[in-house]
Structure formats: C-alpha cells, structure tokens
Length: 79
Image 1 (spheres, rainbow, N blue to C red):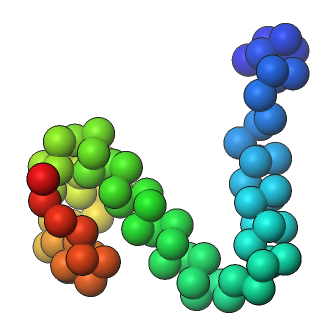
Image 2 (cartoon, rainbow, N blue to C red):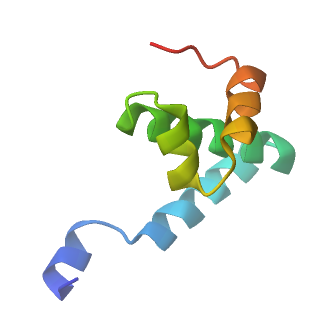
C-alpha cells in the first residue's frame, strides 16, 4: 500500500482498535463482542459464497458441520 492510499483510509488495525474502544466505552462484555464479531463474519462469508455452507466452511477453515451448528445457533436464515 502506498503512503497516499494509507492516508486515505485508516489501517485495519487502527479501525479495529477504534471499534474495540467504542465497544468497551459502551460497556459491551468480551463474550458479547466475540459473538457479535463471529456472527457478522459468518454472515458476510455466507453472503460472498451465496450461502453455500461447504464453500463458506472451507474459506473459514472450519468443518461444514461446525458452520451448520453456528448458523443454527445464530438463527441465520438461508436465502
């Protein structure tokens, strides 16, 4: 990444740190933050893979059955 590109958008690490500070300031517990992140991450990966569990599980580096359990746990609806 060039210096110009770096100046246009905060680095991922900086954005993540800012998000962590905001969550802490709002009193969000670690367990809540972890669940929120995991659900959001899974939802985005499913969207990018057109809700194909096998492809999504492969890209997440987890077993398809583990992903299916998390989809059920988070009540994520198939399109």
